Image (cartoon, rainbow, N blue to C red; front, side, top):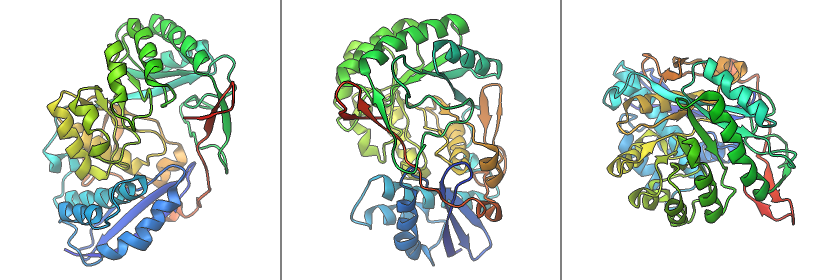
Length: 403
């Protein structure tokens, strides 16, 4: 079998997506997600101008060799653009290989380790009472795990709190919008949120929260300690993790489980966090961490230290990534949970898929490959629209901070 052609499809059914399609001389095709929120065209160019010419004529079944070639052969390694591009290729190749074997991808990986994939949904509101209502609505829908986010009094907008329910796209403007941020107000408000949420849902629902990298290590430690009475499933992205050692301070002060990694690109970004047992869940994704081939290595390392997976699954990851992730989740031995933000009807129509949700769990389905396809004719009706994630500035002095 040989790769005869490959192309990049950029479309925007409700938000921008970058999809790589690989074709073979035996008629099999595979697709991979290569979306990088706010930098989509950089990955599209990397694929079109630098990667696709290197793929033509290669055997698509040699997934490991192609991965190593694209990673090591570029000389300039790592980074979100490079690794998202490699992930697009890798996911498409696994899709082809599973189709050639006429089996769903999870079977090719080694079979299922569980009957379903527990997912968590996003409940948020402009204030605590509205967030509690949303949490209860997700509980009624059958979710066993729910992430709760609330607007903060005195802040006009808070990243992670959607403008509506069910569907949330944080990239909100043609140029980056700027929002005020106050760590002090947030730290006062969040324990109050979970005090009311826990009372409302009782002890059996898993609760999660995302701090979106906005805290210093000692602030994160304080928040984790304050949230201990509410038994969170995890506290996510408390502080930027470029300095992996910073999580040691957080770990020393709280028993609240810690999750991080959605913006990591390689195993080197989380090696120290895992080996020093400074986190409980690693949130690397198929699309941003080099595809299934590399994500397997991260999961295997994590398993040695009883760290579980908890892959990112926001709407800036296309249904292609979700399908691949669910196959991975069903197989991976040290699975923890999968984030699941529902895509809009427009997105689902462009990306028909075999995966399904029932009673708080998802299943990738039994279609050969990862179970997701793309309607190219429909995709062409949704041209790319530039969109940026917002940035935050500290309320008291305007200093640029994190999301």
